[in-house]
Image (cartoon, rainbow over all chains, first blue to last red; front, side, top):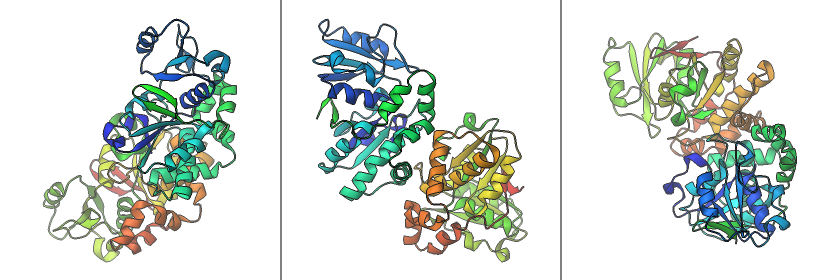
Length: 233
Length: 233
C-alpha cells in the first residue's frame, strides 16, 4: 500500500496495481463504465484534457473532472458519480482529469495489470486479483500527497479478501488498512463522515456523493487501464 | 503523523515533534535515561559515533547502536534496551546510532520541542504535550522508509490521549493510528507479534526485547532532544 505521490515505476513493475480514490475518481469512473461509457481516458491536466477531447468526433466524447472538488470551467461534467448516468454516457468516451486519482493512475501505469477500485466495486476487483499470480500494490490516491482514511479503508477491504481467500502476506501498511476496515466493518458511511475529505465534500455541496460512494459492492465492474485508456475487464 | 524519511524542516517548524521507534531506539533511549544515563547523543553513522565517542574521557561514555538489528562491531552495546541497566549506564553518556530512530531524530530536529516516545513512556510524553500550546507532529521511524505498525500503534495511543484530554483535531493518518491503537487496546504484545519488525526480532534472537518493549507506561520519563543531546525533561 502506497500513496499516489510515493509510487514509482519500480514499485509496480512486474506487479498488479490497484488505484483507489473512493472520493471520488474511481467511484465515478466505475459508475461511468457500468452505465455504458465505452472508455475513459485519464489525463493529468485540464489543458491535456481539452487537447485529447479535440481528437474525438463531436458528441462522441464527454470532458469531465475537477480541480478543488469543483467542475473545471468549460468541461461537460465534474467529478460527481451522479452525473454519469446511462443517458449521459452510453456509447460515449470520457476524457477525465482529477486532482489525485488520475495522477495515481499515471504513476502506476507500469504495472502488469492496473485496476481501479472504490467501495462500489472492491470485491469485484479483489476477485479479479485472486485469479492472477503476481504480487499486488494497492495505491491510495490520497489528497494532494496526504493519506486519506477512506482510501485506506478500501485498501483494507481488498487486503482482507486477499488475505482470507488468497492467503496473501500483508505488509504492515496493508495490515493497518485491514484493521481500519475491520473497525468500520458494515459502517462505511460512518468512516466517510470521519474522513477529512468526506467532511469537505459535505461542506461544498456534495453530500449525496458521499452517501453514494459509501455503497459497498454496488457495481460488478472491474475498470482496467491499458495504453492510456480504461475499459471494463 | 509522518514516516521518518518524509519529514522535512518545514513539517516540524513551529510545532512540537515526537519521534517514535518502538522497536527499539526510543524504547532503549528512554530506558537508558531512566537508569541514570546522563545524556544520549544520537548520530547518523557508525563513523560519526566513533568520532563523537573519542571526545569523551575514557570510561565516561558508552558507544551503542545497531545496523541490521545487530551491534555495530567495536561498539560497547547494541540496540537492546535490556543492555542499558543502571550498572551499565549510571553517570555515563551514551553515543548512539540506529538505522531508523536516529535518522528520524535528526530529520525532526527543527521542531520547537522534540520528544522521544515508545510504548514504555507514551502517556508521560502525551502529558508533556498537553501542557504546550503548539501543534504536534508524530514521527514514526519505520524501517528503512517503510511504515511499521508498532510505531503507528504508539502514535495512535498519543493521538488518542491528545484527542480525548486535549481536544486535539486529528489528521486522517492520526485517526488511522488511533483506530489501530483502539483495535489492539490492552493487547500491545499481540500487535508487536503481528508487526513485521517484531517477527524479525523474534527470529534473530531478540524475543525478550519485544516483550520488554510491549510494556505500556512502564517509565515515567520524557526524553527531550536539544542541541544534539537527549536528556530527561
